[in-house]
Image 1 (spheres, rainbow, N blue to C red):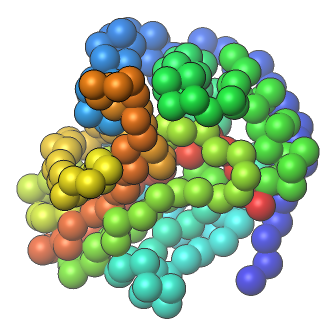
Image 2: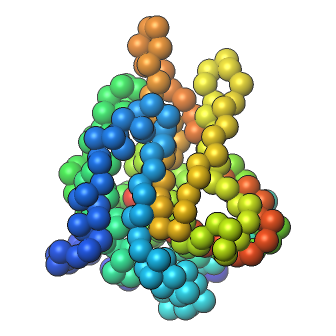
Length: 252
């Protein structure tokens, strides 16, 4: 498989204000932070319009946009497939990544401090990506997933190297009940010496969920402890489902 990188360390150019920026600004980030602290995930309602969702999903077969394609069944990941975008990212995906990172970085920093992890996150995404690229993590990780009837995604964590940003976002691009049935977004958490807890996150087209990549802090009687989290997608009963995944660390 050939991977093509187009200037991976080049900072993103300044962007003009857009409707996307305004929607992100209007989100209640205090409530999002509280939900992430309480349960390891938070809903971001109507992050994308139907037109934006359809445009991203409709370009799945545009080979020029992507650096690689993964068929899940070949690797034991589940059923279905996904494609990793190449640099430079499409404007919408770049805009989402650049605009959401500064809102999530303070939460990620607070989580690390609670868990005793001595890793700090800079306020800008390009500064964090420079750290990734300096360690050999130069391949972009935003991805577009496609599921058909009978497909599913096994529980997993999106870890691609030494440098990991502890939060990521998944955006549902298809409409449940119209485009597909089944295919729920699922989160599990494993607390020490306890059975796993499962949560199904209800999403509509354009909705996003921010969630923990790997671990999150939970307050106990003796301070905070670490809880491991995984995510996946249940089996589709019919139709076709597209999801946009925003991961903020790049891959080695």
